[in-house]
Image (cartoon, rainbow, N blue to C red; front, side, top):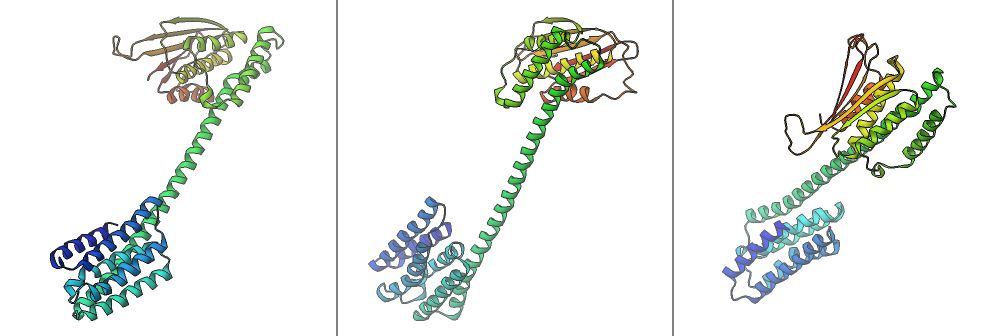
Length: 365
């Protein structure tokens, strides 16, 4: 379209300067402009060329218009016919893009033949004829090459987008699977491990209550989507995991102070990580008592600005362990460290032999 517009601009200027007394020349400009608006306006509106219109442009603007100007418009010299001849270049370019290969060859051959005859009729020199015919051919070739390149790049981009979407879907499925694994590890697996150890009475009311609560939780986990998570206050979420731990005969002394409003996913991550820390106390600490403290306040280094921080600690007075000799287990890595990292928080474990274990959960990091 821009190529054709440049040719039309040359035609308007040429007719205004050389053919002010030739109405056929003005009619030729109007015809070329009208047909160009039809061809390229339709292409813009529909998203692609209409082949019949492209053929009409080749035949009228490219082939018939120069002969009409020669016969009735007083164009008897190459300079007076030149503005109409150059329209053939943009006509061949549009044909190269819009038509199939056989029809492109036919359209270009027709343009070459008629333009050679037209220039012979006005006595153009061989250099002018050869140069113009070269322009017709090169316009078609360059337009086709540009169009081939753009289509090739478009296919490559589409393939890259498809691979990116597939990878993103795979990551989303993996993240959902990982979250389900964490939920199973922190709830049902913890309960089953405790029951299998024989340390508690499976028929105790509090154990049966916990099993029923976890069964209901798993049903919700299977049925819900990520946008169906209810809003959870952080204090309420922590109380739920404390009660769940107490249902398995772990005494928990919990203290809360100035807890702020936090996003639902942050409250869930803090509560789930604290729940796994309590599970670890019950399984590994060799003590039946844990201490949970949750406090809120301004961000570190801030005396009351925007935002808030939350620190949750879980402490036991068990034997502790040497962190240099024991690598974190699956629960500590995924259910505590990874879970906090995913919401922009941080988890730290402070322990030494004979000094118990202190797990600190901090948000934001």
